Length: 179
Image (tube, rainbow, N blue to C red; front, side):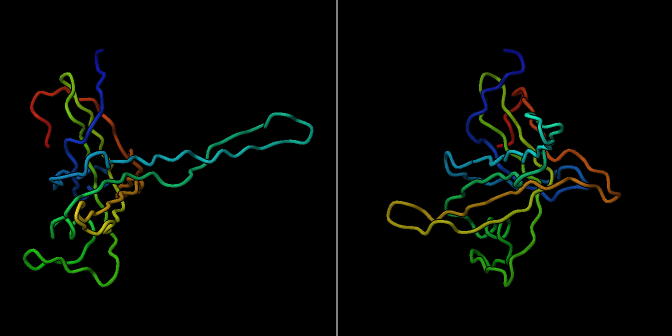
């Protein structure tokens, strides 16, 4: 099927500092994403109905934004660099030092699926609020897990123009995707 891609798996997950209402370009790749951990939380809008007395059907209906959309991934055994990237703070060698207060991190998020039949799907979220937190302690059968939640925000330029908040594109595998 022309233009169709079977979007499965995560071949690449990276973040960059966003541009002026456009996606960032200098991406830092997360080397290991826990299998089957990528989740899109795309929420439905709230429908508002205006009704008049004696009418069975509403005379007007509109959709109002509901909860914000987000993407979640799990990073097993995160490096100090990944902790700084997604949680803020600093590092000394391989030691991560937590920030005193939670930082306000903003990133462009890019996700590429595994190639299938010569195609892959790329998602780019222009401006996301990033929240990272250790979500699982290590034990004899599991590593520690860094849960990263990227909440989609509006993409607005410095002069106030609102741009598209994300894109989804099916691409031909001409070269191996970034991951």
